[in-house]
Length: 380
Image 1: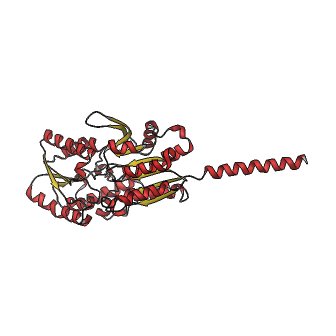
Image 2: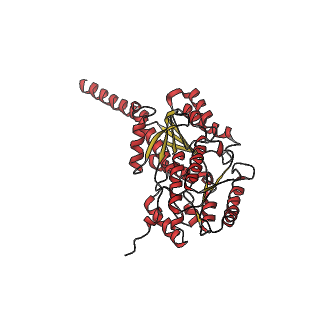
Image 3: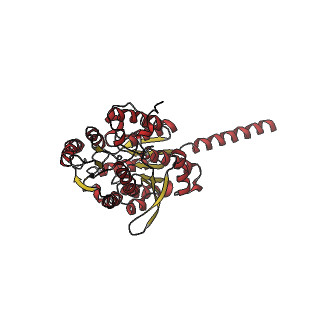
């Protein structure tokens, strides 16, 4: 009888442990990104997260290409994530308009049960910081220094800045633009603002891309004989801008809006690169293609894809929080540790606006621009 009782107790304990383990494993992290046409890097990063953690634990969706006109769709998709009680973390990147409203609704539904992470936000820092637990963005304002330093190194005489009113209403883009303009003036570089069609307008992305393809040669003709650098604030315009610059011997491209080896370069140069794969190999292949086109010294970017890393870090931080909530909903030291484990030399800092207000859950990431000549095979 005692043996039977002991056996029953042992089985009960095993079932209890198994039940706890199963319950403990019922977690999900949800990721919302743009489509491939709006931002392939983020889309592939979400795919990579599913491959890493499994489809049982990572679920994904995309917001509409015309997200400005279909904001309610973005909101409904984020809220739908939260309707699943197993979802413990929601990562949105890029955090397009509507993210803040969606996060507020998630708070109403789930309170603090869900960790909310926004990457590359398009809503102002004060707005998105109030709704999210953690916000992450490439350091756009500091790029006003690093981009112009690269232009000075190249001997640039004219800098063309393509954007449109929607982007020029965003605080960090405006901050970068202001610094770019100030640095250009200090360096004696002519700064030219050109308004391009908004890709989310009725004419769509194709109209914006066609505008770039036509305008770059016109600008080069206008500034004939001068070194001209081109920059656009929009992801979808990058392939057209790279293509147009590649065809003009005196045109330069300091970096994509979201600096990365994978941001438009593969499509522009006809390379089969696994987005988010081996960064060093990608840089080497890009360098060789640029050399074939006589453009190695006219292009630059960052050595790692920060937008993709933001999603990867968001998922890793989220999983760490699920496993051990004591790390906190906003732990800057943990974030910096995760970033530097992925990207050597990443500078992670909290954002302070022009009025001196610091947002302690809004983190910016900065890397140095690359010289593609450094990635060419060394002649013996």
